[in-house]
Image (cartoon, rainbow, N blue to C red; front, side, top):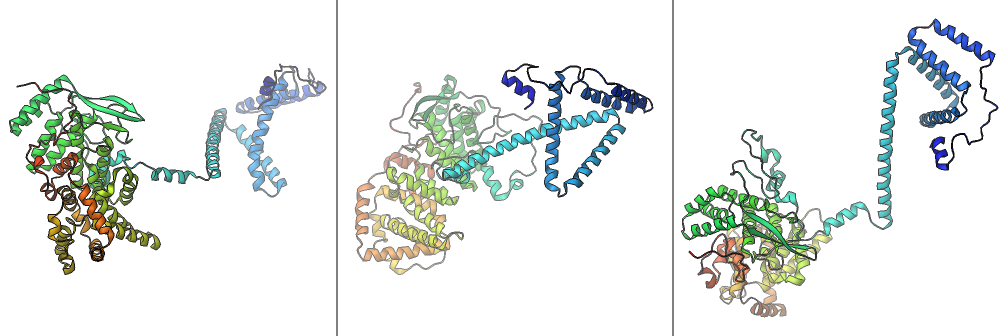
Length: 609
């Protein structure tokens, strides 16, 4: 800090310091006047370019020797102090590097003389450029000091974290481990992200370039990528409102405008006409009507036009996302939509159909994100029963730890062990973890032992519809001869299937029809056959666990709730749909609203025809 700034901080004014006037002279001595005359004679014989520089030197020397104003000491001392500090900073690294100070001093003086001679020979324009360069280096040094200060702050934070027994890296890994079960990532909602991971960006995108001519500008969305082939988007009359907020959870609902309600009534008339052409005509006038898009997508899928069916679902999702409330979040897991309201059901069904298209397309990881998204919209009632599907998608995408984490977190309040899919999938997850090459042998042995125990309990609890219709066809496909002791045993025989409850047959049939591909691996088949033999040994030994599981089956699986029936209808798995009760199969099922809740909240009614 300069002396001027220090003086201002102390509250002193100019001229209050005790100055030593003994060395100051107000006039020139005769000797100094003679020297000045000699310098003027010398400058007369020098070139014009050197006159200016020598004149400046003479003025500087005269200013240093003579002080016409005693206050000039303050400014001069500041300048000298700055020059000395800068020279000292320049000399510091040289002192550390050199070993002989005397030689270095001589070299420095020689270099300074050479620099003065070069500067005197150069025109004055170059000096101005040098001054500018010096200023730039000074600015960069200040930036470097600021960066160093930031680094020092980071180092201090790291030291504080380490002193508390934590580190930044461990903290990040802890956050990833403590993520909620239904955590959704935006980048995983795009199927191209997964396809690029499998095949590379060039194979997915190719060399396609967007056409600039007649190009439409769509709003950027997370769930779908708008296409130029779509009709021009205009708001169809759907909006989202926030109903209430409780304990950090936001409850939303979709609303229909008057114009959209009139289009909805026309759509219901078109459905009752049983003519798909009426729906097509309605979509030509209203290209973003949601229920028409969903219904026509089912028609295209039945006609095996999968590309058009998928495109219609994506268009419906795009229309929904353009109507989102600013507080509605796809990833936080704190946004809720009530399935009892008919306006919200179309969003559930659009997400479900889009998820199934992704799974068939070979993108199970993206489908898993959409499954978690649907479950997060109403995790308590789970209207589409995503718990019967989430384990399958996690196994397909090899997310074994996520299945185990969900089972561990939700078993206490949701009793996931009573669902056949979780009983078998958790055992299969432990088995796949035990087969990983990078796992410690001791840990691998623990995982395999845990898998054996869980699979034995699952086979004892759900014996009827799993082993006979599942293990035997698999053994036939793999040209493996089944053991006679297994096929002839009463525990897995046909009599046990006759005594099976309808609700349990619906659940086990759904799991067998959906996950048969996961159990066809050779290692899994051998493990399953060994476990079946161990289960038969426990049955013959009259293990008390067998009788206990039999009593639980009789008490629990009397009838299935309505959301399970709805899930079976949407899955279209014949092993499960064949077990549906008559009250479900005898009533008409609409693709835009399958099995609506009996206690629906109706906001507007259709006028009488």
